[in-house]
Image (cartoon, rainbow, N blue to C red; front, side, top):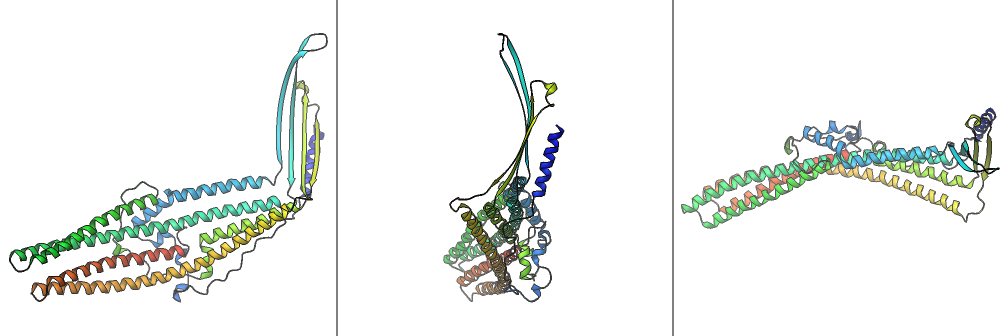
Length: 463
C-alpha cells in the first residue's frame, strides 16, 4: 500500500510541475471612450465637486413617507428579488466552472456474493469485496479553464451590477410614482375647492334669478361649471386609486392605500444640482459597469476558444484492492497510471469558427459598452435641460396663476356692479382653474425632472 501512495504522490508532484503559466487569448483592456468635457446644460459650478449621483437616496429625498416606500421597495420588490436570485445563480456557475481546473477523484466500494456447486458436487458460498479509486485531471496547460473561470467571475460581477441597476431604476420609479400621486392629490384639492366656490356662485346666481336680477341662462352656465368640476373630481379619484395600486405593487405588496407625506408644494429639493464630471459617470452608472463586465466575460471566452487549437493533456490514475476475505482486503492491490495527449488534426474548421464567433461576441459587447456610455451622457444632458427648463416653466406658471387670480377677482367685482356679463366671470373662473391645475403639473414636472437627473447620474443604488 505504501508503494501505491508513493506512486500517487509522485504523480501529483509531476503534474504540478507540468502546470505552466501559459494562458492563450487576449488580456482585457478597457475600450477607449471619449467623454464630454462637460454635460450639455450644466453650469460651470455644476461640474465641480461631487455629483448628485454620489449621494445616497436617503439624503436626496427628504419626505419620510417616500423614504419608507423606497425602503420597502428595495426589500420586497420582485425585481430586486429576481436580481438577487440571478446573483446566486452566477455564484453557483462560477463554482462549477472553477472546479474544472482541479483533479476529480472518485472512490468506489463494491461487494459480491455467489453461491453454487464446486468440485465434488458440494455447494459453496463465496464473496468478493473491492475497494478502489480513480483520479482524472485535464491539465489546464493553455489556460482554457482559467479563462472560463475569468469569464464566469465577470458574469457574477455583471449580475451584481445588474442588481444595482435595478435599485437605481426602482428608486426612480417609486419617487416618480409618489410625486405623481401627490400631484393628483393636489389637483383633487384644487378641484374640490373650485367645486365649493362654483356651488356657492351657483347658489348666488339662483337667488339673483329668483329676484329678477339675472336670467336663467346665467343659472345654466353656472350649473355647467359645477357639473364639470364634479366630473373632474370623479376622474381624479379614479386615477388616485389606480396610482396607489401601481405604487403598492411596485413596493412588493398588494394593491391598497399609500402613506402620504408633505403636500406637493412642500416637497423640497436642491435648486442647483451638481452633475460632476462626465468622465466619472462611467465609473458610477451601474448599467455601464454591467456592460463592461459582460465585455470582460466575452473577452475571456476568446481564450477558451483558442485553447482548442492546442493539445489537451490529461492524466488518469486508478488503484484498488480486492479479496474474498476482509482480513486480507488491504494486503494486496493493483494500480494503474496513464497520460494522454489529444491534438485536433481535422475538424472542418470548427475551432476556427468558434474563435471567430467568440471574437465577434466580444466586438458586439464592446459596441454595447460604448453605446451605453454615449447614451448615459445624453441622458444626463437631457435631464439637466429638462430639470432647468422645468424650473423655469414652474416659475412662469406661478406668474400665470397670480394673473388669473387677479383677473377672476376683478371680473367678479365688475359683474356684481353690473359692469359686465356673467360670461366674463365664467371665462375667468375657467382660466383660473386651468392655471391652478397647470401649476400643479409644472411642480410635478420639476420634481420628476429632478428624479430623472438623479437616476441618469447613477444615483440610487447605494443604501
